[in-house]
Length: 162
Image 1: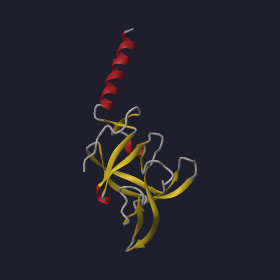
Image 2: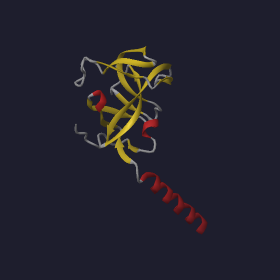
Image 3: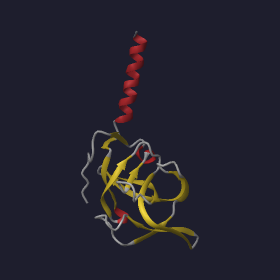
């Protein structure tokens, strides 16, 4: 009996240590991408997705002095944060990503600064057309891992301020 109690006490301590430095967030949160001048965007927190993504359109790549650049427009013209302005930034990598409908597509990945829950992080974002999706940003497991605990019963746990 003592062995079982000791084992469960050990597990409980490990669990508490694992979660004590993580931030509780809801299934939807407001986020900022300050380097893109995008603030208070709705982000869907999706622990089923591995990769995080940003809704973009007119995504093109080009070579420039030995580096690959990506040019894109963020959001849609009817979105309140839309600015009809192209962004041109370095490509971090290009990789195959399986979308929610099971189709594998080649996507451009960029590195960006993200602000969520009052903290700043670096995130890898795949650029894709999410026009058919309800939220312009999806945050996947790769970004969430070891930083956050998601309470799916809550939305907008943190109110972002610009």
